[in-house]
Length: 468
Image (cartoon, rainbow, N blue to C red; front, side):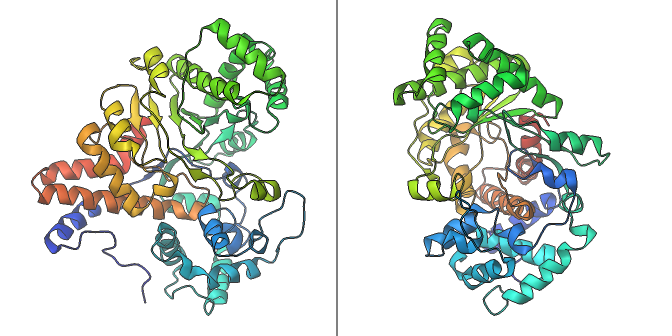
């Protein structure tokens, strides 16, 4: 019994489905360019066996444990560490059995598609996962993970990954990237500069982080000028380790363009005492514009990931910390929010700003018109809660007529779950081919144009936009 339908996500009309099949055949085996994600560079540096099925497929995937928690499964039963070091489940087989017995909860979700793809194509499993098959799955996957060809570098090559970008904070020493570079392995793993911990006054330990930032760079982060220079030096250090992009995860897309005197005064306030809500918001906004100016200088692509209301549950944050499934989308403004940045540098030919959203209503109303006008702006793909078949389709429907295809940047998988990368790219390629097939059938595209577009959406746009 196959877990996957070979025509999954294609149109149901036979004639249109045939077009989609032909387009997909052109791109199914293209290399993967993964320009933004959160896989651990330590995996590629050390190239050690993955521990067990639970650590590979459950522990790193917030899509998995947030769904289980929503149905009453305590995070402790899934082995999620507690901040206070309190007891949690440590038996990976027990964690796996909880996951398997609740696998029906993922019906109709993208997680189900990604996981079934992984089970069938990577581990040759063809029985549905359930409580009854939990141990069969565990034993089969566990045995494979002990083989050399299931280590991280071998899987990187098996997945046909051409390049993958990880994301590291401004204070990271990038030791794993350095070790990868010195290992002689040919896999291309680059870093991305994520300065949130030294840009967001609400980030825990912000003022201590600023002190560490100064020590790391040899800059006087007690002054505004020294603080900006510290960013320039860290950006240069990240570029030495392959970085072509920065990433900024703010609650809003607000930008500001204060005078340097006003910015210095604001920095003096937020760096020396607890910032007020308005001060913190204004400082984050100013720093997006400062980061854009630095991107004009050094050519790094800028990514803005706004709209996540982080750590929505105070109780879960207190017990388990960040990134535990309680980041929730919120309404986000872009037209007025981005205007100070765009007025400052939006027409610069050397600047690329890739804007993402968790507020789908903004695509047609704000983002597509903005990207369809400003040369510096590009639309990031459907992201996080919406990197799903329906979400990817809606993205194309809401943006193409206004921004076209070439003001978008292909697909990125944005994942911590390494085995899901080929599955996620496969879903995106299938959905895009289905969309293009509809345009061909409706007389809006020639089939040769659709073939070229399929290649662009699957491979070329991401590679070009991220300067990879």
